[in-house]
Image 1 (cartoon, rainbow, N blue to C red):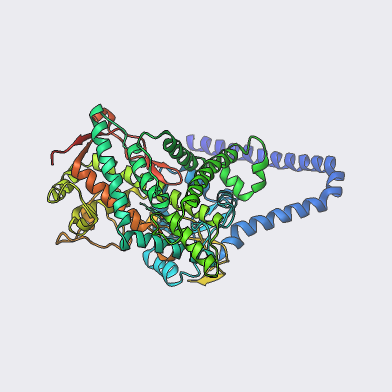
Image 2: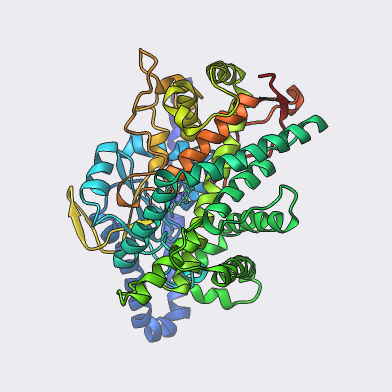
Length: 539
Ligand code: HEM
């Protein structure tokens, strides 16, 4: 009985459902007819236009989501117009996301920066094949409106390619090598600043906890200043602090999301309000160009042809003079190129090294056991460590490697483009498309660095305690575009860390002020501002 009632109830419910569906369909049909009737004339008139519009949109979607992707390496599915940018914005941590994508799609995958594809190469063997073996095809730069504006066109060294880049890079490397290997000028200039830094820390550390950012920035800033212009600033110099603030501001401004808009639609830099960050960037450019102008003017007044060059600017002037008076081809050497080359070297040499050093002090504070072990090794040496000591300071070298690996300061490497249409591994990269060695993924890859999130210098030591070479460790990148200032940066990091650790201890102020290792994404990745308890060691 109960069962029969239940069956009846279900049948009635089913009939009700069917009736509702029929009514809904009829309703939709008649509503549709009514709409057609109302808009009949409009549709008849605009129909062809509508059809063309819909077809164009369909072609656009087909082009963006299928044709453009067809010959590129696979990767996370992009959304129309925004590509994979939403994934980045929503991700808790960009570096981990990139590694996860590597694990899912392989050592070469496509990331979409809005409508623009960027191919990330992070598998070490593929990196070597593309960027070393086929270096000529994979070593151009991705030119864009913003860097062109900062460098007054196709100038400097970082953003150019072709013959001009080859000539200017070769010359710059030659000068730096001469300063470093030929005459030990580089070491003298670094040590001079390291000694000043030690004295400065000695005097201010007695005042209690301090931030290390400013002293490090002045030290590194003075080293590059001295190398480029032969001038240095006091730690308290207001002019230098202003320059420093400008550079920090530049790093912040270029990360403004509106910069993406300027890249795809440069005319938007003319629209009031929307162009506010652009105007700010142009003001910074003015300050930097003026600063460089003053340095070059001073050098022009004091330049003595063929005298031994004591800085990069004189070396460049000597080269120009020699080409001019001996009727040699001037190539791409010019006053404007000198200014922009100096700007590139100044910026590239400053931001990267200061940021790495900030991470270094933080890591040492957070890992006192590592600090102590490095100090025990250093205590076998006099209280001023020099470059000649480097090969014997194995543990310290491992610590510096691990600092650079963990700092991993460039989540996106500098933008490289292919020089010509390239077909490789079944992929097709049209000339000008971006293919980057994504060193940040390699440095963070658990396949090469187990428990990659842990600070562990021992991973760079073999079973006999010797320094171990790990192919995936390439903080200065690889191939023909490898960092131009690598030898200077390595010397700086070694001499700064060796001498600071030899002479000071770096402690967390107290548990309440324990700094985090949170990564602040900008043009480079910095740590959050932190306070440090700096104590003089009794050596
Ligand atoms: C810890 C410090 C540094 C790190 C981690 C670093 C890292 C890098 C990286 C990853 C690149 C990009 C290579 C590529 O396109 O694949 C690069 C390029 C460059 N670096 Fe450094 N760098 C540092 C210090 C310096 C210094 C001190 C100078 C100044 C002399 C410098 C000058 C340059 C220049 C001019 C380029 C562009 C080279 C070119 O396009 O041919 N860097 N650097």
